[in-house]
Image (cartoon, rainbow over all chains, first blue to last red):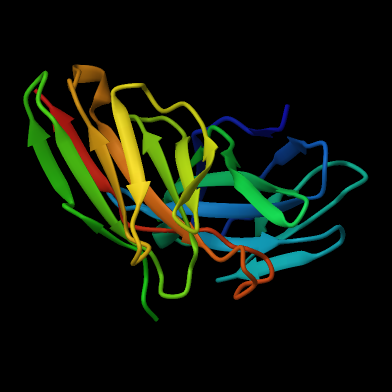
Amino acid sequence: GNSVTQMEGPVTLSEEAFLTINCTYTATGYPSLFWYVQYPGEGLQLLLKATKADDKGSNKGFEATYRKETTSFHLEKGSVQVSDSAVYFCALSERYGGSQGNLIFGKGTKLSVKP
Amino acid sequence: AAGVIQSPRHLIKEKRETATLKCYPIPRHDTVYWYQQGPGQDPQFLISFYEKMQSDKGSIPDRFSAQQFSDYHSELNMSSLELGDSALYFCASSSIGGVDPGNTIYFGEGSWLTVV
C-alpha cells in the first residue's frame, strides 16, 4: 500500500541553522507530494507541493525536490527562524485514472527553533 | 482568497451524545474530505465526497456518517460519542474537475471536539 515515512522528531535547531527533514514514500502510481505545516494550536497549511518527478516546490524559503529515483521529497531551509517552529507533515496523493486520491500523511516532525 | 470554512471551531459533548460538524468548501471545489487528528497524531482520512457522492472511505467508524449537499457543503454526524473521539476534525476540499491541475487539497482550520 501507499505510505509516507518521515524522520522522527523532535528536531531542535538554533536560529539561522540549516534544516533538513527527510521524507520517503511508497506508491504504486504517480503521486503528487506535499509538505503541510501545523503551527501550535492551528490547522494544517499547505507549505509546498510537487506534482511530478524533478519538480521543485518552494515557499517561504523552504524547498523540496520530487526525486523519483530515490522516492524522496526532503524538506530543506537554509536559515530557520523561531517562527518556523511547528510540526511538519509530508504527504502524498495518488492519482487513480482521472481522479485524485486522498492524502496519506507521514507521522509528522516537530521542529523547535531556539533564538 | 476564500478558504475552507468549518463550524463550530470548538465543541464539548458528553459520552453517548451526538455531534454534527459542518464544512463549507472553497468555491468551485467539487470534492470534500474529512480527517481526524488525535492528540500528537497524524491526520487520518475518514471519508470523501465528489459531486455529492461518496468517493472514498477510510477509517470512519460505523457510528459516524457524512454527506455532501447540493450546495457542496458537507456535514459529519457523530453519534454515541466515546472519549476516544476527542480530536481535531479537519475538513478539506479540492477540485478534481480541473480548477487546480495539481489537485491540491486545502484544509480548514479544524473543529476541536472534546468528549467528556
